[in-house]
Amino acid sequence: MNTTWQTVWHSDSRETETLNQALERGLDLAVIFTDQEGHTHRHPIDLINLELNGQFSVRSEFVFLPAALLDPHFDTRLAHTIGEAALNRNNPLTLKIQSQMTYFTLFDNGKYYRFNDLITPSWLGWQSLKILAQTPSFHAP
Amino acid sequence: MQSNTLPSQEEDPCQKSNTRDDIGNDTGTNKSDHRADTDILMQARAGFSISSTMIPDPAIPRNAPEHIESYQEPHIIAFNTYGWTITRTTNIGLRPSNISEQKQNGQAYIIPPHNYIYPLGGKLSYFLSYCPARNEHLSAISALNGM
Image (cartoon, rainbow over all chains, first blue to last red; front, side, top):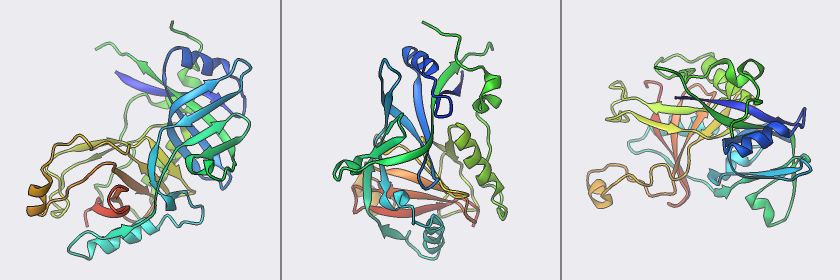
């Protein structure tokens, strides 16, 4: 059995019928969105609330992340510096880095927040968003 | 009830392939153009899911695993040409282990929550181990490029 991912909601069309069908079929969902800095996120969806008027919110699964990954000023090439340094030691290099347990809750109105934003509270905005559904496809042997 | 009105395969970029393909690997020692990683990020933006498989390589004696190990990478954060894929946090929590014995043998031991982070788009590829339960540290545990 192979699985495929199909787009069931896109912020360009905002049509919710296909999303509704995916929910009725109980398909696994994932969300892809572009944040204000232009970074792309893809996370599995834990739950989704679809209102009868078409408004919805989706929440991703929890994930433990190094907080630096959520910092738009973080240079991603730091990971490779870490790796190169580790190769020059007898023991693997360990870097203490702040931990962040978070999830992403996104709304169809262009806003989202993370778990840690609940403290402030504060809102962030997304530029584009699409929801994917994983559909099984069976092939005869 | 099954529905037939989901988008057809021709309408969706995710449907160009419905099988798991190897779109990037680290068996080569020259990755100067990073094209494989760029392809991975481009396809992730299009909706593809990502899994990783560690395969034993005698050329990396320090890091050579004794088995093939596969992970789903459900969380992806992509910058322009760089990105990260992150495994689920508890993916190895069920592995049986004797911590004191492994300490004596100098082997790595891991306490959940724990996940692996794989950076994409650099000159070299590393599997980063991240363990927020143990002093919140990030370690490079494997070089995947045949150093």
